Image (cartoon, rainbow, N blue to C red):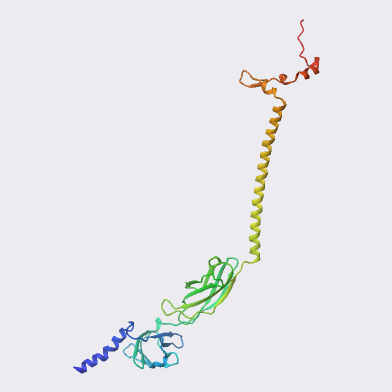
Length: 306
């Protein structure tokens, strides 16, 4: 009976420990691993989190198959590495420390580490008023990673802008960035789709400048001057029209007042005819002195009897 219990313990104890590898209370020490995949050779590199690698006595990586072939790690000052690992296999990692053993399931396709991308060009295009950023990235397995682009300016008012894209070029308008000034950008990559993994390191920082050129400023100034000149001309024409209208009204009032004061009898000698129209006798308005000075020729001739 004791031998049977011992056999059950030997068989099921590693499985129980392995199933609890995601729990926080399984071990205070954890291991972080990344797979470096190339066509020539694929390696697995691991390191202890927040612990010195000196605590590792040895580590082995075993296939989770019936054959259970195992590889032993090459210990380094900061990490330990397994070389020539098959990328399509699932493994069980066993790390032997001084006081405990850490076990972890390894899937090479889910912990792929890729190099940082490069920024081929970052420039401001004056004709479209946009910033264009071209990216470069090369990996033998991960051909279409996801990119994270970060842009910030040298002014305190410029807020950092971050965008995640799935293609190798990126554009953004100058208005969204905040106008003229010096800006900086960097990018990092992450495997997606069939492969998985964490973000790579950031690329080198590249700067670009947004500046309104003199030709554009001249065009803006010319358009503004033209608008001001047209507006002033319209305003001046309206003022002249108003002055002319006022002058005509004043002139008419002045002429009417002059004739009224010169011939006051014209109003009193006018009468209404049978049609209801107002008539004025011209002879009544002519002064008597003018008739006397005219003489007999001004008098109406009298008809003679035959």
